[in-house]
Length: 237
Image (cartoon, rainbow, N blue to C red; front, side, top):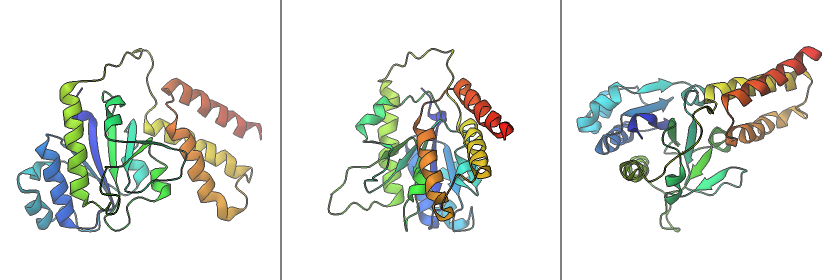
């Protein structure tokens, strides 16, 4: 199992100091892949680099995206962090259950902005949600503190190599990019038959559909089959 498979994704981070501190926390446990989505500060800037201390290389090698969809397109499993329970049809896991994750795949830990965390729509891109156990009367964690707790725990799991996976090498899981392509084709065809009614419910209905597809462990072959089905349905009209 390799740490190069693991990315830490900051969605709309607000403060330069927190971005730098996150990079430093990652390097404490030898993680190198930092992804940012629409950071509020100019990126990178002197304050970010100064706060990162010895982790400037993590900042300089990081990737910056303008949408969450693009950011997770090459990630197999997205784990969204949340301080509150979400009443959604998505699997919730705790730190201990991270041992069951296949870290041979490309894993992305998704963190929301300091001000508002992650919305339900943003969480719909995830395979799991994860809560860091805290004082139930004071659940709020600084962004970098939340990241370092998860980084330390994952580093320990990888060191122990505690979970063997015996899945056939012939079965290749679909990438997020393949899932997105299939999903977008599905939505396109549903739009063409005016499926989303009333129109004001369209965003929520799309969010629910995304939850269904993204939590399924589809293979690349299964994704191609479904894409073919959706494409054929469109042609029939």
